Amino acid sequence: MSEKVVYLLKPRGFCAGVVRAIDIVALALDVYGPPIYVRREIVHNRHVVEDLASRGAIFVEELAEVPSKGRVVYSAHGVSPAVRDDARERGLQVIDATCPLVTKVHQEAVRFATTGGTILLIGHRDHDEVVGTRGEAPDHTIVVSCREEAEVVSVPDPEHVFYLTQTTLSLDEAEQVITALKRRFPRIQGPPAQDICYATENRQQAVKRVAPSCELLLVVGSENSSNSKRLVEVGVNAGMRGYLIDDERDIRDEWFGGVQSVMVTAGASAPEVLVQRVIRHLARYDFNRVEEVEAIKEDVIFPLPPELAGHQARLTTIANA
Picture 1 (cartoon, rainbow, N blue to C red):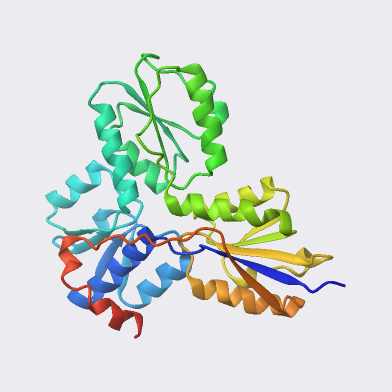
Picture 2: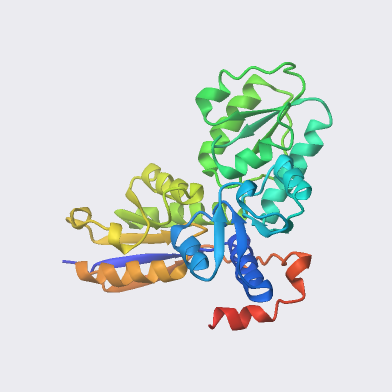
């Protein structure tokens, strides 16, 4: 019998936007002291949220839960102008951790809306990122969540239509929707460059590249992480069985019958410590050989917001605490 092997994909886990968002909360706690309020989950990972909460971050659903003049961090997924207006009216001290790539989509929405046309926003309508982007131009925006909706969506002027996408979609899924929209609205315009972020694309491409060598895919990520769920879908579409796991405790014995090769990766908001726990757990099933496969190099870094940029040197101390 051949040796059982784990293919550990790289890149995996934290993207630059997630690193920046987590650093912002950690640094704010260090510089200003707790409590630091965070609107919604800073990133969609339970372990990350619990860790920051243990350090003094207070996670709230809405700004009404933040005391007047309190300090609040916006999550990496962004917020609508209505939320920003509310913060100003209540005198809140805001630190914006919105991923710069999400901010780019917001700016595109504003630009398209000024033309008076209709924006078809491709994404999952209840996702925080889509809610925030739609809020930039709610009267001009229709959310399209799948190809079936693309086939039936109605717009006031078919000659004056634009599309944008959520940054964490499946590349293949988004392309199917865009293709349908282009067929129905030949004059539709999109952004100058695709909205799906580099990290989402890279992690999906890595899964596709290694899929022919694997029988089983394990994606480390939380259930509410869109990009993590898309990784599972990419693997399944490539012919593997795939499972989304929050950590090693979600792994089931029955998944491994006759399996000789397992692919392990992680969504863009999953910490590396969880990946390593999964790798150690797989040794129980005799997966003792681990091969790291680097499909694409990543070296993207996003700067901190101005409120914290002068305190960057403290991050090393925080990371080693």
